[in-house]
Image (tube, rainbow, N blue to C red):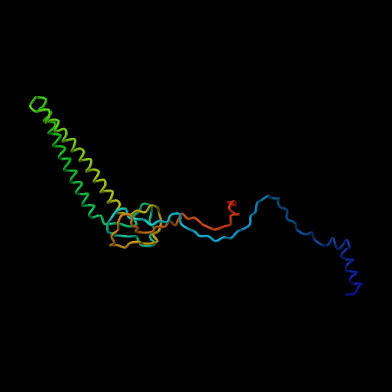
Length: 214
């Protein structure tokens, strides 16, 4: 470039007219804020369910139904059932025994009232009255034992429905229909898909750090 042309351009650049023709640069003003920033650390981890259990049977018997894999089960809903035919027969026998004892107790109460009246008129001995009272007391105890037997049998019948202890999805069937299971034997695996937690491996140096909410 010609030296004279270069000098002319430099003179124009530093001249007052040239500076006035250049527009001012835009500037944005913002309020200064104080904040805390932390570095991002990528770690490997796994997402697991907080409730993952193999549900077992609470009584002996033959499996009549098991929920299919993928079935969503609510809390306290059955995920398997066990044949309760024999238990139902036991319950009917216990109920018949209880009815017999109640009939026997009514007879003994009437007999005790009759003997009590005879004793008051000196037509019956006190020993017979005491014996009637003793028989009636023993019948009352037998009635209580029969009621306990009925409650125990009813509980076993209720246990033939293997209930879910928490809501979840059946992910594995551990028995098949027709198999005989004993008490405590696992029948199905249930996983809660709603309540989850993350397990990750991170350096000890970041244990004290915590995440900030939005």
